[in-house]
Length: 71
Image (cartoon, rainbow, N blue to C red; front, side, top):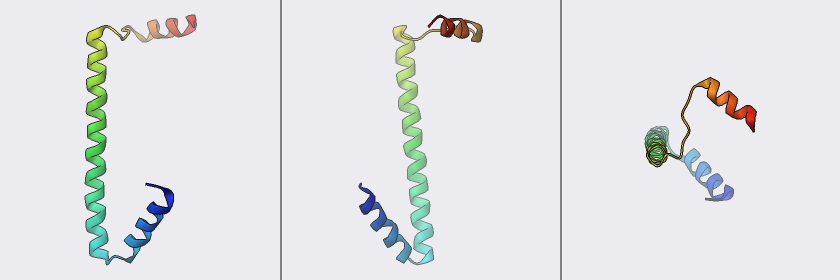
């Protein structure tokens, strides 16, 4: 959605009665929360797959700092 389309949506929102604004806000908030959950779950699956493939490094903070200093 382009900026102008979003601006039109916001302008239309401003025309709604307060009850409809509250309902729309509630629906959008829930959808945003769900989208964030899905993104976290996807990232967790990717991380677990990388761990199983051995594509990640493990160690202590000291190990990490030593590795970073070596770059």
